[in-house]
Length: 117
Figure 1 (cartoon, rainbow, N blue to C red):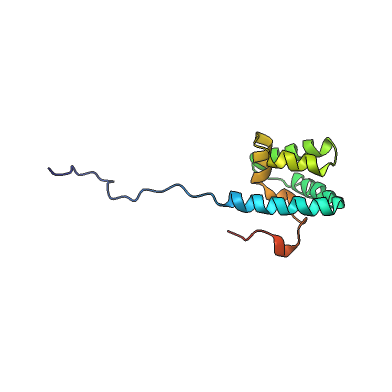
Figure 2 (cartoon, rainbow, N blue to C red):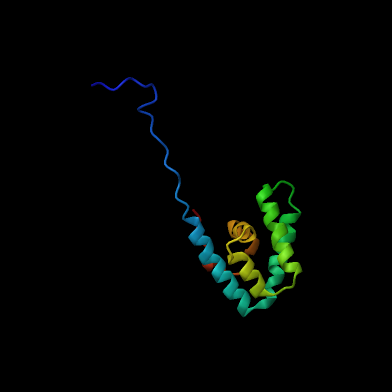
């Protein structure tokens, strides 16, 4: 039995991309919170990052929402453990904050940053 001709049969199917950056982000965020636990004054850097990104004109909607969620958590108090729980919990807020580790840039040293993909 012969296979009927199909114009797109030989077309290569795309496989979904594996998202391994999530594990890199988790490792980086755990290092960030370890550094924040050692030096709580660096929470001001997080606020400065939020202000810096808030002033930018064109940002993706998800990034703007992540900024808002991070501000909400920081408005409850500058408790590092509360922020850590918010980032690592399995909720919409946690997923949004983990998706954008740039909110926590400048906390760790340059050698500790995750490798560029």
